[in-house]
Amino acid sequence: MVVPLVYAVLSGFKSTDELSSNPFGLPKRWLTSNYTDILAGGDFWRLLGSSTLIAVGTTVLVVAASALAAFSFARFAFRGREALFTLFTMGLMFPFAVAVLPLFLLLRSLGLLDNPLGVILPQAAFGLPMTIIILRAFFREIPGELEEAATLDGCSPFGFFWRVLLPMARPALGTVSVLAVVTSWNNFMLPLLVFTDNTWWTLPIGVQQFQGQYSAEYARVFAYLVLAMVPALAFYSVAERQLVGGLTAGATKG
Amino acid sequence: MTSTFLADKRSGPGTELPPPESVRARGRGRRRVLHWLTAVGFQLPALVLFIGMVLLPMLFALYAAFFRWGGFGMPSDYVGTDNFTQLFDNPVFLGDLWRCLVLVVLSLAFQLPFALAMAVLLNQKLRGRAVYRMLFFAPYVLSEAITGVLFSMVFAPDSGLADHILGAVGLDGVGGLWFADPSYVMATLFLVMMWKYFGFHMMLYLAGLQSIPRELTEAALIDGASAWQRFRNVTLPLLAPTLRISIFLSVIGSIQLFDLVWVVTQGGPDHHSETMAVTMFQYGFKRYQVGYASAISVVMFGICLVFALAYQRFVLRRDLEGATTTMRGDGK
Image 1 (cartoon, rainbow over the protein chains, first blue to last red):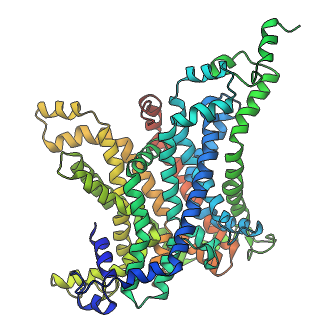
Image 2 (cartoon, one colour):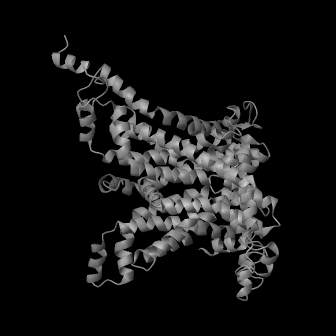
């Protein structure tokens, strides 16, 4: 399982010549220039920044919109509620690849190509179903007495949502946020289409392009690959519990 | 006319807004409309986003699939179902369907049982099992694109890790071209998929296993059931809902595979690793046959939908019935 990862890390410390003569072993001389060259250039940091911006934007949007919708699904009885909820849950079955072509045309006509919003909006939209389902289940658990008490104290529905429900729902919000960050971070197809020039490229695109550009210099590609993995793995090691909780909750409720 | 009670209430701040569900039953007329507006108002941002970015594009794909269209202006050259009939004459697309089936079968036959075995193993009291869990699951957080680049290096002919390992154990020449060999490419891709996704399924199973009360297996143990009997007659039936979900996710995932293939082979050599999404991408974004590509989208969607509905109807229904009663209280 870890062999390919370790292989990549070690290979990044070798020269491309050494890679063919000494594929497994520790590097004879630990060459750090592959890594430092990439870090010293601005490109890698720009990709990292762009990936981060898009992930944060997507997450804020999808969690905010979903929390409002889930609140209304969980706490209000209104005409059309079940139909609306079914509509959203059906979204789970819509493969992203199916919508990507017309989505691209739509973004083009809205002038959102080469604009981070062109990735953020669709990603948030496709993240809604899962997020709403998880949050709705959580909001339902919060006792109705709390809501009655808040209303008697003069709290509007939004006031209750903002001042009581959201603070109580922090663990669930954390879970869905982590899910949203990971999904956005890993998206490849949409950024590939939306960003025609490299201004807003994200890490997955950057890695693919780098491999194409330096296809003969294996060691450099390995170093780049390792650096591109670091943020995701670091995030994972911090947020592991939330991520796994979210996936299992989402999967069993979906 | 208004009672003093209502007049009193009106004077307080925020009292025009709907009361909680329990009190609301009495509301009617204007208040009812207001209540509905408030409820739907909360839905609005999500609804606008969902309709604009998910539903409308989907419907438009359905519409465009009936036109010969290059993607500029509005489609006007109506061709009826020509795109679809051509599609089912296209050997590449028929191959896509076949390869999709192969991936589904391979996943169900190898990936999921392997994930289940690992989950059962890691559910025991094992030294360092937290570490194993982290390690097995880690590939899931790497993007498919990055995984793809990594494995195109690992499986690079001659210079890659895979060939070196085979060489080191005396199996020179067994490996070979990997991704570049038409007869190996799908198997190699499947290995990569397995590396990336089996941890995800394992985690699902682990979560499922942990919700099975220990007393049940202990009782079976006391009754003298062997390890296999305990697994077969106690664990497996109780894990069935999780298994059904994981099968569902695995199949849907196989149908829409794109990133990995695009990064590693772009469908090659000679279409031997092409998937429906890759074919759609080729026609839609490389050859500008947008109507034709839309038809591929529609077929993909149709397959997903039919599968999902049939699965829900025949397989998941039991779980959903149980879910309302047994799933309470796990909403953490």
